Image (cartoon, rainbow, N blue to C red):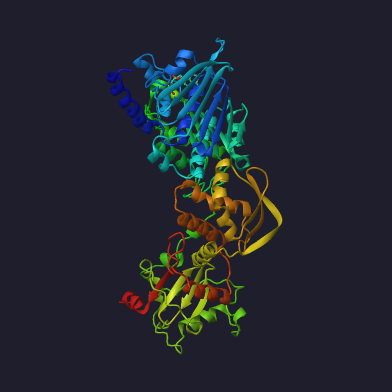
Length: 614
Ligand code: ADP
Ligand code: MG
């Protein structure tokens, strides 16, 4: 090699490393490129082997057309591709990759060993490269197809290697890529292995079965088929029935011509179709496949981008929305599902009160409810109780209801301020009562406070759960009949990360197969909540935010569990229960907001009342 040549070679290696940064961002991007190449080569069976989330090994074995001995080397040259011959081919591409950069980029940042043979060749080739340099090439005996192993990714770029996230997180990304590709090609056979364990073994099947093979029983019976012909081509696939909607981590996939794409605009169209059928913060799963003429779409030719633009997106939007809506309608979806009682309007009686005419304050009571029953007070009719509160002069309340209680209540349709400092009352100094089975009303010397009972309780539980996780105190309740928690591969990798925290919260698990567990105990106070669903919900926020800090993760888990366990609106409370909560709140670090960030009380002091009476 001449001196002149050296100068050219070095920048090329560097250039490839830089280009590699674009294509090869993480192990998952290598998996994507290699599997897409295998699909382009006409393979019907593709086996993926991963070690250490792809740090140590990413190997893809296919039974496709293979490469000649010459091509086995040429394939690694930058811009070497068998897929574009003329510029206009760019607009007609039906294959996956098309920049001829993937192999060159991968070889620049890893040790690569390629074994490949075409049907018509007697012998196959084995080519080895390291950091972009060809190290060996020999003829070998092997079967038809290609077997490519990528070892020690980023071995020569320590900064990139350090940049990789935890194995769990990197492997989750790989699983995501595999999900996307295998959903796009249900008729192909795939397997995914991690550290020698079989993660997926997918046989050729139809789309519906492939979805169930990947996402399991959760979606069984909850998928509705969608099919419509439009001017631009066919839209087909499956959408989840409303009951399949979940708050976080729904499986949502768009494919265009067998390529996974992200499309926020079309996502919106589907979201609209579910309006009023599911809570506004819930998401339904969907698997939508567009089959369009390649000329009518503009695939961003950056290989790592998954965005595609359609010729006439505005025209597709209403069609998509309508077809999903119609599908949901046909399935007799009932527009309700109130799984968030926390969104109940705040003190509606006050908000709708008429302003111009003074009215008698309307207070509704649960007739069967006696606030004094459990506390040793003499029994009185509920209405007497309110009068007692209004006329309480002996204890020094300055709120004199009999003077003009009507205006005070009837005009406060807006600015009830939130008391930021809640003075911890001592039991002797306050009275409590429940209002509308939804609020805990507290009268203290300083103020009238109305607590949202669910949020109040959620705050208390939230802080308790956090403490339990810190101190690993356990409050478990054994389950008489253990329940089986079946996880997807992705969920399982997250589960292994957080199972210690879940145990600290009071769950107990026993292994029950590769990605399944028996729940043998649940946290105390979880009530009627389904244990399996609770564990899944507890992990959901984490799933959508894999890079969250450990502290943040713990807070989310505590929040989910607190929201599930907290008493709901509609629950009648005894005076003791109410007092207990009010006093427990006084010991909380935050006494004004529920864990979800919403206020947990409104408070009105004397000044505020007087200002309103001017
Ligand atoms: P591109 O896929 O954009 O053409 P790549 O760098 O991914 O670029 O691959 C370069 C070329 O190597 C491909 O065009 C193809 O001819 C060949 N090749 C790569 N992987 C395989 C495979 N698994 N089987 C057969 N040929 C392959
Ligand atoms: Mg490619």
